[in-house]
Length: 272
Image 1 (cartoon, rainbow, N blue to C red):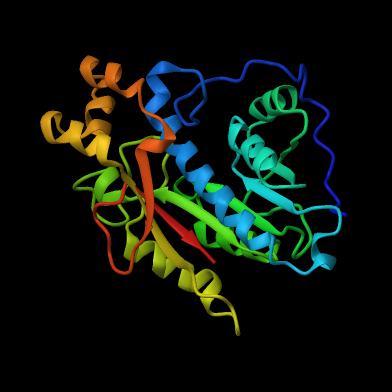
Image 2 (image 1 turned 60 degrees about the horizontal axis):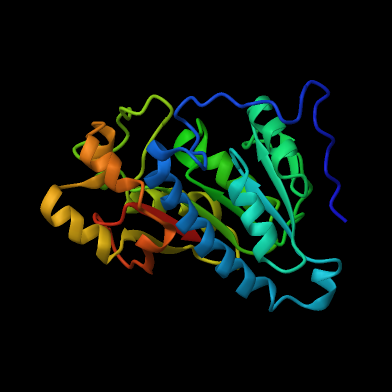
């Protein structure tokens, strides 16, 4: 049984409204719908990947169901999706923001919501059957420590996603400060592979990360052929793009393996 530390005493009202700063994507906000659907697509893919993995675990490792970590969970919709789609799963959501995690506790009562530092996770080694951390590493000041912590406390697969810098921030040089004030550093495929090699591949017998890319599906590509980049136009608050983006769903994205540097994927996904 996982020893989950108690939440801090200052959560306040568990249903307190969290502050929308632009850093976290939330459901039910029309102007956020494209970004929300893009996150959803990653969570859907991650759920299917984890479900396949834990179903092959020996029964002794799955006594009482799988225990999953959603690191940097934000609003909690992804944690709840993982819990509801992976059979017998217990999901622990952890994030640094107290008010946001209060919202998670009030909105998704079956998710264990904790406040914690992602580069010093409060869990024992191999506490989780799988760990998921989507669109988080670009916010972390010490990404190497973050990856090592995820690896340390997970006995099964770890899934990490991040915006692909050449697509998300065209023209931004490697290591340069992103325009997004909430991003510390954005990565391309080669940089993420290099970071993962330092974090996990040096360990004897360790699995090598496999890279995937999240792309726009056929419907979005068709719109962009006429109107240009949908994300760029959304960032510019273009009214036509904002109206179109309200129709986007997680089905408008695809996830496929990538072998070399991929400058077309909107998000990079690493699995090990």
